[in-house]
Length: 181
Image 1 (cartoon, helix red, strand yellow):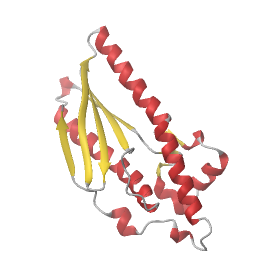
Image 2 (cartoon, one colour):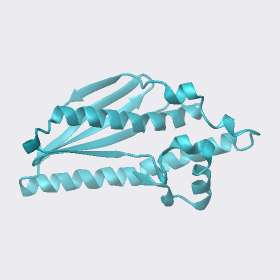
Image 3 (tube, helix red, strand yellow):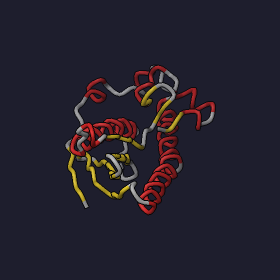
C-alpha cells in the first residue's frame, strides 16, 4: 500500500480532511496495489479459497480508485489495476485485477515454485516489478487524481461537493470475470 507520507505536505493535509477520508484505504494509507495471501498446504490451505480472497480484496481497493476517477467525471480506467500474489507451500501465483466501466477482470499472469533458485528469482522479479509500478506510475496517477479532485471542488462552499453520495459509496461492485492464461 502506498503511504501518504510519500506525498508533499499540502496533499497530505488534503487527504487528512474528514470529507476526503473515503479516499483513504486506512489511516495514513492510500491506493493499495498489492495483496498477499498465504495458504498452508499442511493445514488444508486451498488455492480456490485464496483466489476468492484476493478477488474480494482487489475489487474493494479498485472500487475506491474507480470512485475517485468517476468523481472527476472520467470513464478512463485503463491504468487502474491491482496485483495479488498467492503463496501456497512452495508455489506462488501472481494475479492482476483490472477494471473498466462494465466491471472487473481478474487474470492469472504467472506462477512458479519457490523450491528452486530459478523460481525464487522469478518471484523476486515479480515482487520488484509490482512495487516499481505501484510506487511509480500508480502513485503518480493517484496523486494526479486527488489533486484534480481538490482543484475541482476547493472553491465550493460545502465539503459535501467532494464526498460522493452514500449510494455511490455503498453501491455493490460491478460484475467480475476470471481468466487463466
